[in-house]
Amino acid sequence: MENPALISGPTGTLPAPFHGEFFVLRRDGMELHLNGLCCGARTTYKATGVIYLSDIRIVFIADRPSQINGQPIQAYDFPLGFVSQEEFNQPIFGCNNLSGAVRLVNQTEVVPPNTFKLFLLKGGINTFLPLFYQFLHKIRQELGQPAQEVTPRPAPSAPQDGDVF
Image 1 (cartoon, rainbow, N blue to C red):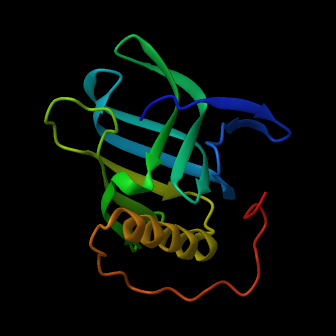
Image 2 (cartoon, one colour; image 1 turned 30 degrees about the vertical axis):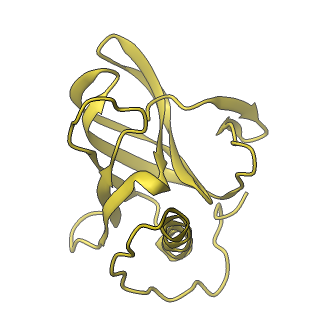
């Protein structure tokens, strides 16, 4: 969903939490590639920014707002209950990334889900990935969705700079 509610905080612009939601990770140096329906138009959206991982969603906040179909877009959120086909990619050349699909929350017509790639330009996958899969598994259990096969990753030995805020 484009442009979730944002608030000003001590580290800049932050996602406004839902009641009972808690954010566990902030990751700078991210790049988002999104293909699909955004701001009422079929488009490809690319931006650099920061992500926030909570127990129910990932929120991407762009470094600079842009325009799609005449509408400003500064942020995009990925409710974990609507994410599917997630895959962690480690290309030989290029940045590690998480790809997948996300269905639109309030979509009334039948359209294919948006596809996305979140590139980790500054690394830090050893903290992000285990938390992401843990929360995704928890949400799927709560929603009664079938679990997808996941290749377990080793837990990090210690937090890295910028991992937890």
